Structures are given as structure tokens and as C-alpha cells.
Image (tube, rainbow, N blue to C red; front, side, top):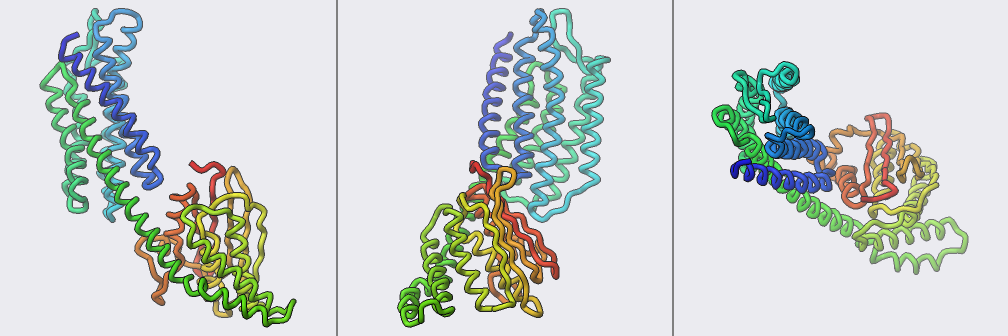
Amino acid sequence: MTTLQSVQIAMELWAAVFCVIAAFSVFVTRRYDLKAADALLGLLTFAFLLNISDAGAYYFRGNTSSLGYFMVRITNFLTFACAYGFLIFGIRYFHHAVIKRNGAINRPARRFMFLISGIGFALLLLAQVVPFYYTFDEQNRYYRLPLYPVSMIAPGVVMILLFVLVIRNLNRFQTLEKISFILFSLLPLVSVVLQVLFYGISISTLTSTISIFFFFAMYLSEYADEMVEREREMTKERLTLYRAQIQPHFIYNALTTLRSFLADGSEARELLDHFTRFLRGSADLLTEAECIPAEREFKMVQDYLAVEERRFRDQVRVALDLEDTAFLLPPFTVQTLVENAIAHGIRRRKDGKGTLTLNSKEEDGFHVIDVIDDGVGFDVEKVMSAENKFDKDGYRHTGLAFLKMRLAYMCDGELIVGSKPGKGSHIRVKIPHVVK
């Protein structure tokens, strides 16, 4: 083994270590952007295999033992094969980035790139049976055959197409994104040419890993920006909630005094009890920065619903079935959903009448809360979009997009929104028994 080959192996092993560390970092933060994270995990997986395989090919080269015979053939095949997996996930990552920035996928170009990659991989498989790209001598050493340059045609065509698409969409990306996508499409393309001209060092393996490093840096930068924005939104929402509840916080003592002037057992005194407990509970929850017991939230919601039922008499009916209350959830989760169901659903019907159903149960390893109403419903896609902050009257609409973010961020929870205009709504909260 030459000094150059020893350096090559060391570099590739360190690159493989980087891929493992980067993949772990992406995996633990993947909730922020699942599609980007999955594509990047695919890239890192194939980059890891590419580096390990190429290092193994150099290490076992010339080893005439039975193990060496098989390892040389397996590692060389994987070195070629991983390049195609690398291309597939690279295309997926690029197209997701374009869509994320309101661009459109060039579907014919994408299908063509996948087709070319498939043909290239099929030829590689055929070359294992009928060698025409490379073969091995009696000393179990790899060497190229005259048709070796053909093996670079499919990857080269794909990278040229990807480079063209990157240039056409360049104005959609920020500076780091532009650098990342240009390097990803250009470095492997240059290395394909150099790989044909030079023998003895795996240029394409090194350039592929370098391009992945920039993708990883881009992902971490976007994740950091997202966390800052989430923290800003949560602070803003907390201030909004505080402003909405600050007046009741100061007046519930006055209401308690008023209660003493009402007759015991009267409907007015009972209603005032519910109202005072609701105000006290709301003010207390504003000080909570972490998840709270669901039972505490449900008690506050029940007081709120008791007031609303008496306020609207027979117009608003409430059905409760709270089987499961032994879990934690972000403050005001259920309150937000219930209040929206009444104010933006039931009360916006022409007759102002309807039924609100609130259920809580355990199901398939999750704590599940269902809030169902037969109100006017809404356009889910419009309401859940980040841009839809206010409704047509100028007031905050459902806050569902923010609640979805809070659930995922604070307790690995999921918000499933179902609604159709004129048909009512069904909102489901799912919180896992074991929070990561």
C-alpha cells in the first residue's frame, strides 16, 4: 500500500465519522423539516457507505485471501453503486428546497434524471456479470477496462442537468444555499472528468463528501433560524395571551366579593363561581413555561364551557367524555380549540346553534384529545398556512398553526386538523406516552 493510498484511507475514514455525527444531528432535529431531514439523512448514509467502501477497496486491494477476494469485489461495487443513491437523494433535497421557496418542480427533468440513474445502475449490475467497466487481476487488484469512461456518463448527465436546474432557480436561494447547491452539482461533475483522467485516488468520493458538508451547514443554519423564529413567536403569543387575560386577573377578586351578595344555590352564584375559577385558572397558566397536567387544563375548560352554556342557553350544547387526564400538555391547548370551535364554528352558523364534543382517551400509545363541532367549518390549507395570521374581520383566527408548532416543540405532540366549510370541524391532539 502506497503512502498516497494510506492518506486516502485515513481521509475517507474521517469523512465517514463526520457523516455519522452529522446524521445523528439531523435525526434529532428532523421534526423541524421532515422532508429535508430525510433527504439529507439519505445523502449522509450513502456518503458514509461510499467512504467506507472506498477505504475498504484500498485496504483489501492485493489481498489474495478468501476474505480479501470477496471484500475487494463488494467494496468496489458499493463504491460505484452508492454514487447513484447519492444522486437520488441529492435530487430530492434540491427539489424540496425549490418547493419550500415557492418554486415549481421540473417534473420531466426529474423523471429523466431518475431514468438515467436507473439505467446507469442497471449497467453497473450487468458489469458485475460481464465485466466491461473494471476487473481484477490474479493479485486481486482492481483495474479499469477500456469502457470504464462509460460508467461516468450517467452520473455526469444527471449532474449537468442538476447544475442547469440550480442555475435556473438560483435567485430563490440565500447565499449559503446558492454556494451549497452550486458545489453539490459542480464538484462531482468536475470530479467525474478528473476521475477518468487520473487513476490512484478517488477524487469523486472526496468531492462528494465536501459538497455534503455544505448541505449539512445549510441545514443547521436553517434549523437555528427556525428555532429563533419559534422562540420569537412563542414570546409574542405569550404576550398576546397575557394582554388578553390581564384584565380578568385583576378583577376576579372583585367578582369573589360580588359572589357574597348572591343567594346560596342560585344560578347566578353558580355561574359566577365558574367564571371566577376560569379567570383564576387562566391567570395562573400564563406563568407556566412548561407543559402542565391535562387535568388542570380540563378543569379550566369545564368552567369556561359552563359559562358559555348558560350564556347561550339552548343554542350551544356541550358533550364531555374525559376518560384520560393523566398526562402533560402545553397550556391553553384545549382552551384554544374549544374557544375556536364555539366562536369561529358554532356561533358563526346562521342560527348560532350547534354541539361541541370534547373527548379525551388513550389510543395506540398516545393520549388523544378530540374537539368536534358542527359549526361553519373552514379551509384547512388556508388556516394552517404560515401567512394566515388574521381572519377577514381583522382578529386572530384559530391559532392552529402556532398550536401545532407548540405541541411538536414542547411535547412531541401532533395536531390533526379536519374541517370542511359548511360541514363542521374535527381537531385531534395526539401526545405520545413517551416524550423524546
